[in-house]
Length: 426
Image (cartoon, rainbow, N blue to C red; front, top):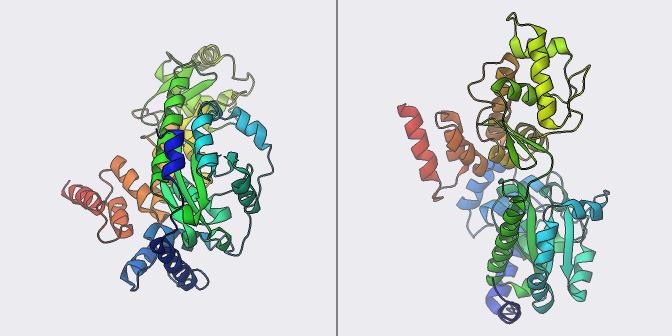
């Protein structure tokens, strides 16, 4: 972790001619592509970029421009604001404690080196920011403050939106931003993950373009690693609430400790999590047992056991969860509903309760697989296709889709090609 003095000394402005030439070239690229974008599908845009001469924008930036233009006006001068109570959301965020503990390091960056720092939630809304007086005023003018929405659909191409979409660190310089009001900025960003792998949000450091410095990304990565390390430490304390894992495995966690349940009880709990409106006793019996002749007392006994296991969070006349249970399967569906295929693929660790032959579980298993697979095949981002391909090794269409999206010269093509070869051979 870079100390305060090191950050302040090494991250001084670089007002050299090479940096100015880079900004000028990017402005020319932006003027060629953004006001009058080529009439091609976003997934084919990378090929167009790679074929053109003179040099064109980075492929990830170019594709983001094409996606963003459907929703964002490049003449936008300020990020839209979230109307929710951001202070309460930040107070409840698991990132708040670790970020507060790193106050000295963050102070050294934002005050000594002339940056503004921000932390967003998983949707790209800024929950916290800090900066010196000058940078804070500049940030306020473009909505880079708590409540500002910086996802791709609201603020176009920027480091935060790219990191949120790809799950990887990202930097965006000057006219690589879709919005012209941001062309005087450079931003460095990395995602923050919880101990269980969930993406909680991103940490961003931004400043004026003339302060562009590769050491800034190293600082972001160090700060992000420190936040995640502290989150790991927090996770060692028993967590409140109930957590159900049913993708690729079957486990119930309560208060941070595993709860022993029979498979049938886990199946019932999974159905209650997936269908929050609940079941009448008759419908739940049919969902669990199908046409098999089984007495109602068996189902009642299983539900009674689940009440004790979950702290009494299942209602009586209609079986439903009175308090939502955190469930990986519902989180996948939520991510898909939000259009976040990358997060859905990351959370989809395998089939729903593998091995279960319970009729309703089989239906939900097929439903989830079709939803995730369709989202991947409908997308124009190679990342989710590659990630899903690692879990669906026999899926020829997925591997072909990944190859179709990856540009020539991308080292990841070898992975997709090898998977495709193996799938054909099998």
